Image (tube, rainbow, N blue to C red; front, side):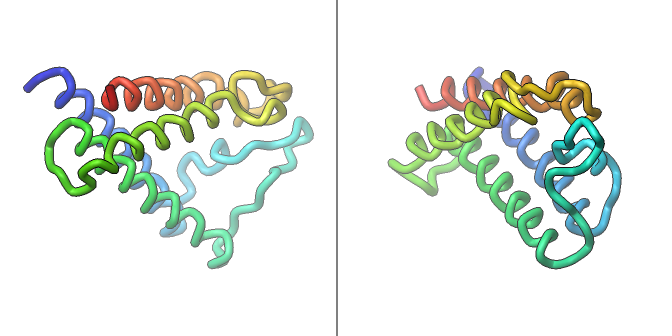
Length: 144
C-alpha cells in the first residue's frame, strides 16, 4: 500500500468515525454533546439541541455529508472511481470547508476565537481545530 492509499484510508476512517458520532447524537445519544456546541462565557449555548426533528435532521445531514467526504477521500486514494473528474474538485472543496472551520468565526470557534475559557473553546483548541487542519492539509495532499 502506497502513502496516498494509506492516507486516504486513514482520512476515510476519521470521517466515518465523525459520521458515527453524529448518528449517535441523532439517535438521542448524549456523550460529548456538552462540548459539541459553542457557548458564551456565561454558559449559554449559541445553538440549542433537543430531541425535536428540527434540530436532529441537520445532525443526520452532517453524518451523511461526512460519509460522502470519506468516500471522496477513498476515491482520491484510488480505491475506486465513481466521481471521475469530479473527485479532485470535490477534494479541494472539502479541504476548503475544513480550512474555514479551522480558522473559525473569530468569536466562538477556530484558531482566532475570542472566547477561549468555555469547555467548548478548550476542546476546540485542543481537538477540533487541529483535526480540521489535519483533514484540510491531508485532502489537499491527496488532490495533488
